[in-house]
Length: 393
Image (cartoon, rainbow, N blue to C red):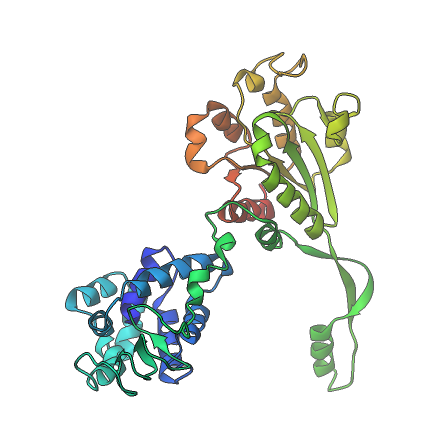
């Protein structure tokens, strides 16, 4: 069963390894769970999933694998895989993983415990309180009653086995779906790099221990500057027009950034950035800030994030007087290039599905202007964007 489940996880694109499978097998051999499908779900997720962004994929894989086992024959068939399943399992392993299995006595050794269990029962059973079957009070089976039962196939009558994986509580953590405030915050934490600055105000525990040891046991207290969130972020939001349909995700991103970064500045623009940007959309024509002033005010240590769908007529980027709102003396591409040249770390987040970028020529133009650092507004896309911002040019 575990091998089939392992293969199902890999088919659902979860990065599970043989080491994690062995950890799960060891936990089961130590009887950490018994006769409790919900407990097995949590144990399996703990052993096999190392990043919470994969929780939703795990839930889908768990449900897809176990809901297909509709009968006892199916369950028994899965407990000991057929030759083709074993071959497929071995084929997907790396050389290191194969060597680890060999060091443990081979695949047969791993299946030995399941083989012993299978020998105890060879046929379907109905009623009673011991064997796997239907009805009765056995902790295994369906359509019966046991307070700690595992439903095997069929339908539940007493609903005592709650399939928590069907709730899919973590669907918004899937790295392929649009962002929400919570998982934006989770991703943005990767960008927060703390710098030590100011007076020495905190106890340096590691330094104190090391210094005391070097000082023959005489206490030698070491202090370090207090930690501060030193990341500086400057965000430019595209507003109006086709961006109206993306207002919610932009609001969530802005909310998450405000809660995560102490040094955050923002400005608005429409379609492509030109010689002026603004802070208040209701006064966008009367109270603007020259872009050159922004570049002089905010230094190279700022991380720059553009947020927009980059969807417009190409001439709005490439042509003089191309703006749909005013008579711009210089093309938008020239102004965007000034921003790119002024900062070491700049990305463009695009709420449009990445699969559709190829159908809008202006997206390609903007992507090239920002050096290819355009990323989709998904958790996975934000992860890639942050990785680049941390690294910089």
